[in-house]
Picture (cartoon, one colour):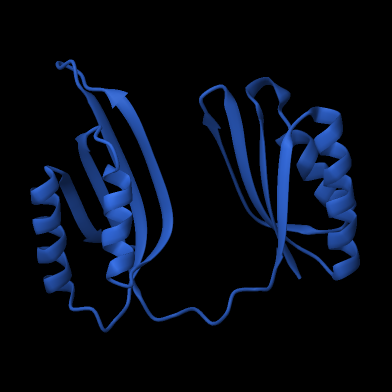
Length: 174
């Protein structure tokens, strides 16, 4: 059995240093962990694995930890991944003026073409040499084999031209 955990707390709480030993003490394994600073907060995402009893112990311990450290913790029980679909992994990077709903538009385009989004990172910052706010994103996407890649690339670049977005869409090379 697997458990996904999201935790959010103030930057100075260092709660990840408390969560990881708690998981270990409950005899669960960490499969994935991500943590990043978001303004003056820290957000952490974990995927852990254990039997039902071990997972239940972690859930109880996280409730206590949440109250003691004044953080927000949410968890969701999940099953192991199904068989991986045959897809071509691509990286998609965009940069544009920070306009309302730009990331929503990109996500809608991708989902409208039945493309799975594995990961999104994005940030807004002040552009050097200009007094403009810029928004950049990086996606990891999975393109199904039935989608013609050249057609997708052309449609996406036309979409970006229409919204004045500079974009790079290329396969992930390993």
